[in-house]
Image (cartoon, rainbow, N blue to C red; front, side, top):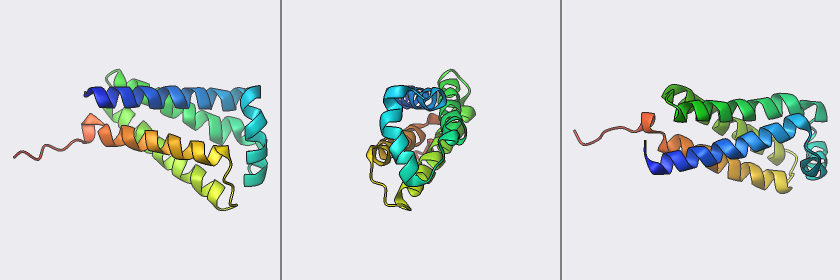
Length: 128
């Protein structure tokens, strides 16, 4: 496991853990900016637990398991987070919502893509 993968996976895990738990608990400082973005995107606040918070937290748990020695779970979690944030960006784009959450989704997508790209189980040996 490369240092780049470990660092990227840890940052992605920490970011998604915080974001998922904040959504599930309705963390007040986050809700000040999240509530208007949800309204503009047409997403009900009741979706904060599922399908918003739980998949992020599950992705973070999967990445952590990958780092702890269950590589295919980590790979699946990274791929799931990529899909999640592509869908999140689409949700914002379809209503032309370029709020802070849109740009955060780009950052989170970048982290998930980087984690998946650096995943050691996906590296092909091209030396042969």
